[in-house]
Amino acid sequence: MSNELTVKDRAVKVDSEIQFWANQLNTAVYQIGKNLAIMKDEKLYEQLGYETFDDYCWEKYQLKRSQSSKYIAVYNKLGEQYLQDHSSAGIQNLYMISQLSDEDRENLEVNPEDATVNELKAEIERIKQEREGIQMQLFELQEKEKTAEEKLQEEIEKKASELAEERAAEETALAKKRIEELSEKIKEIETNYEKEKKTYDEQARKSSILTTDNEALREQAEQLRKTIKELESKAQDVTVAEPTEEELNARADAIANQKIEEMKKQSEAERQIADDQIKALEEKLKEKEAETENIRAGFEKKLENIMNASQNAESTRVENAVEEPDEKARFKALLTNVVNDSNKVIEFAQLSGDSETYIEKLKGVFENIIKKLNGGAF
Image (cartoon, rainbow, N blue to C red; front, top):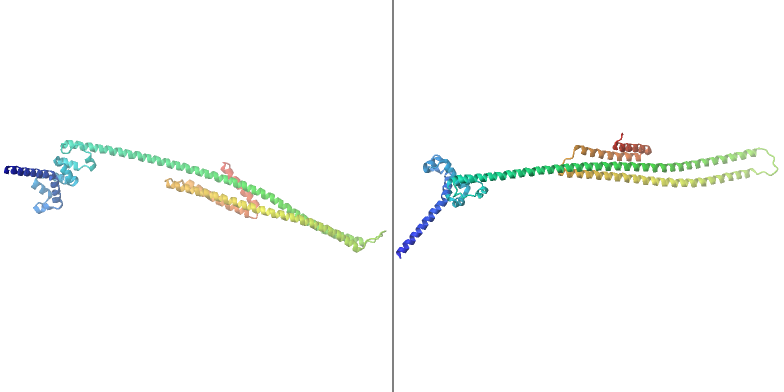
């Protein structure tokens, strides 16, 4: 029985020794690197009588600076678990592995513990070339993407410029069309005004004629009275009883009064007709003025809408990083001034005392503008 316990005890002891040295093997590199780092960072070597860390490493353990640096680098970059898992890889292999990134370290296709230093160097070189190849591909991809973006941006700018030019052309054509329509409307208003003015002048002429006729009748009646008095003053023999002076005067007055009354009635009737026609003409003129004002207001509103649409297009184009040429901005500003000044001069001409002359001149200006737009001489 005692022999059996002795064997068991020995087995436990041997197992403990194996485990102890196994643990020592797994943690040797890590512990050396850790303690060397502490010794260096905290300058504990000075407490042991050494002036420098390199003196301590060499005199105490015969470690050169390059060797101590490798232990510290392995400790700082690989960590305890990695060093335990690859404890037999050797400090040189572990140092080379510590210089790799985490991604490259995971891409190792050789076991650091089985590979020689040269094999590990070759594997690291392969990973490096592979990474550089990937980086080159990524760079080329980025360049292609950048080129594609630049081409797309150029296309966007070109399209935006074309659209802006098309909109400007459309706005110019629309403005030209509206000017032509306004000119035609002015012509129509002028024609109607001339017709109605002629009618008014004719009625006024007739009214003047009636007034003149009334005066003429009064003069005839007065002349008739004078003639009667002259006849009365002459001595004439008559075979019949002649009317008395009172009868002659009454008869002359009756004839004159009757003629005057007839003329008055006719004059009043014609005057009433003329007044009615004048009122109707004035109403028509008011309607035409209101219609002209509505046309002008509508034209201004449409021009305002055109300018607002143009400004909105300009904002959209700025958001797309497309800058409108100064020439187009200047054209829009000039067009706005032309429209505003045109409205002012039209209003002035309509309200002027000599509106007929001013409207005729304004009409000629618009016609010349249209000719100029069509390529003719101003």
